[in-house]
Structures are given as structure tokens and as C-alpha cells.
Image 1 (cartoon, rainbow, N blue to C red):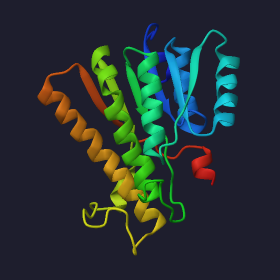
Image 2: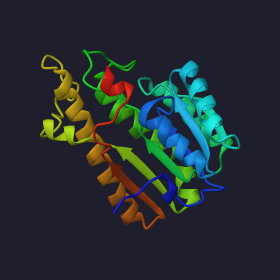
Image 3: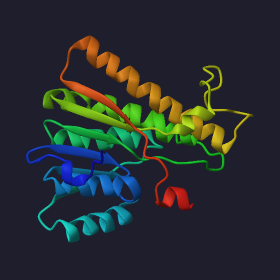
Image 4: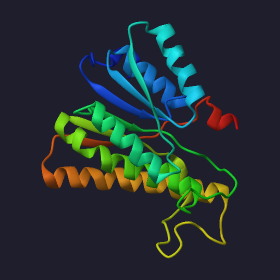
Length: 217
């Protein structure tokens, strides 16, 4: 059994927020949702690449409804600003795709001093989801899709005493920890949705090996 973009139902009247929509999986996700008539909020750090991505989608879907919101997941201030902008522009959010991420990079820290991969892939998305939650719950039924990876199996658990891997950083170990955190975040969010009996679903996606800049670099 196969499933493709042609199987997406008509999303007219729906609003979707996609992080990292300026390239790779995020761009193709935004393209597919726009092609199904959703209004797509393209949340991205690199505004020049985001503009090029928007033009690319419009070239294949001339009638698509798109907007760009600047979002740097390595800054909780940027996450708060982006969330405020999205909430002010959209009363409800039907789909949130937590896609943006970094993979196996040299050790760096976010603005707040978090290990970069953990901070961007997990903590930034945690904060974004929390701040967009009112709109997601107003939409009902809505869904939050979090991109994880089988690389989560590289890490058994996060050490609460040293989640930022100070003194024992490894690029793939940090990536595995971040993807494991994505996995548990999505499962925990679904438990909260169930306990609150709200019309929302938290879903996980493992994209597999894909021909994107993340893999190439």
C-alpha cells in the first residue's frame, strides 16, 4: 500500500505552520500542504532562502496561500516573537509540523546556552508548540506532527544532570539525544491531549534517508 501527496484531502480553510519550510523536508511538506489548498505559514530562520522557497511553491501552485514568519529555534526570544505574530494573525491553527533541525554538527550553544541540537530540535519546538497551543486547541480537530528519527536509538536517555552534554559532547550522540527527546515529547503531548479530552493529535514521523541539504552536509 502506497500513499502520496495526491491522497491528502482538500485542506481549504485550514492553516498549517511548518518549521524549516525554507528547504528539504520542510519545503516539500509546505509544498504538499499548499497544493492541497491549506494556508501555509512558512516559519524559517533564513529569510532569503524562505523567499526563494515561497517562489518555488508558487511556481508549482500559482494559487497557493503562503506567508513567511521569521523563526530562529536557537533563540527562545525569537520563538516567542514568532509565536506572538502567528497567534495575532491566525485565530486557529489546524496543523503544526515541527520539522526544522540540525544534525551531527560541531559543538555549539543556543543563545540561552543550551546544547545546539537539543536546543533547536527539541527545546525550541517544545516552546513553539506550547505558545501555539491555544490556536491548535481552538481549531479542533488539530494535529501536531514532530519529526523524529531512528537515530534516537543512539541515545538511551537524557541525563537530567547534564542534558547539554558538557564535557562529553559527540555530534551523533547529541543528535540521537535530541531525536529521542522529540520522540518522548510527542508521546507525552498525546498523553496530555488524551487526559484533557481535547480534539487534537500528537503524531511522530520518521522520514528515513532523504536527499536534502541536511544529509548532503
